Amino acid sequence: VILGVDPSLRGTGFGVIRLGKNPPDTLDQGTIKCPKKWDRSQCLAAISKALREVIARHKPTVCAIEGLFYAQNVKTALTMGEARGAAMAAIAECGLDIFEIAPRKVKQSIVGYGNAQKIAVAKMVQRMLALDELPAPDAADALAIAICHAHHRTILIYELLDLGRNLVFQARRCLNHR
Figure (cartoon, helix red, strand yellow):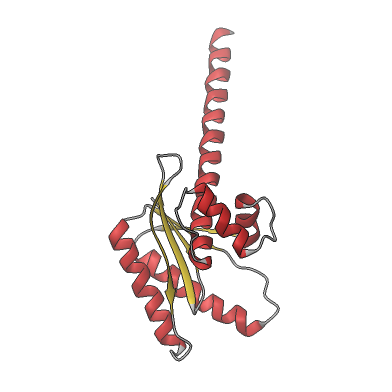
């Protein structure tokens, strides 16, 4: 079970998928919304609290979160960093390993183009997870992050299996030459 998180101060997306079926089961998705009238500390607390509740409800085994991105506006970068920090602290407190994935890598993996628009990501996520409705943009991004992590994990497993087969083959060759 993978928790994907797309952190933002006013709209943190989350998505939970369970691997094992094709397509994976979508267990939960949504956006943690914080009104503009809330101060920053209220938003950070809401992000932490909501993510703890999602983790308690679905018991994910791992979390994938959107990594840092290049921001021209320093204030935006700091605000995003604070939201990421609140999310990551809550996730780490629950004992989950956290894997960061760059936004461009997620878009490249899901849509095939690293500068894809949010709507393209949402439509592809809907198709990949066989969802009846188009997910909200931030939830779609979080689901895309979870899917991307699942793909990366699967590739790594196949690479390890291939490495294992090669080691077994080499060991047999060595034993046969003795």
